[in-house]
Image 1 (cartoon, one colour):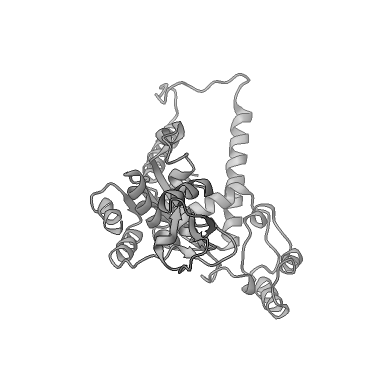
Image 2: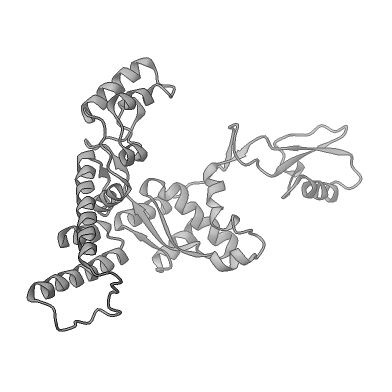
Length: 329
């Protein structure tokens, strides 16, 4: 399975971006080990395997000949009856559950009704792009590729784009005990320092960790987090998204983009106020011949920016795309 999953990348049937993530994929798949798919935890998908307990006989639970599998208990019972004709037995389902990465590895096609050839399966599988974090490239992406090829004969997607991970302004991994976890809602709507402190007490942090976390919050957000809005947060994350680099999220930079978005809003409102009632833009981008030198210069810069934005978005280079927008304005 690993060999086939590696070959589709070599053949160009699956493209992994950025290049650093492709190298990581190769590193994992060229040094593959056996995968134990069972877990002894209280939640998960039960393994569809059943031990056939034959009446009046001594049996070894670890002996594979006494196990049957089935998509349901009824299907397993039918298999057991064929395997042990005329015998009286009971079925005991394996108490283990499947590794969550095995279950999620089936996701691209199992949600489409597989193994049935449903209309959704025929229309939406395989898909084009999978976007995910680089940290689960092997744990999730590779498993989907391996299981997709094995069970459907097709690669579940043709491109994988691995985004960066968001860290705090100092580059530290976000941790509740450090008090540096940033809730996107708090960035969008704003939150006071005291409210940040209060959120720490909702969880199950040790009192000593709460004290430590409060100090971290006071250092990082002495005045709380200002209301930045959805657009500013999105634009900031796009501007941060350099290939292969994690994001050290500085709230003040998000606030800076809030002011930038406000600039766009005000400029648009001003332009709309200057337009006559019932104004309709031209159907094409062709010049009318009445544009002033300044207007022609602005239109030229706009066209250059539009081409650059579309080109960079096509290459998944969101940092350069947002930079082109910012520089135009």
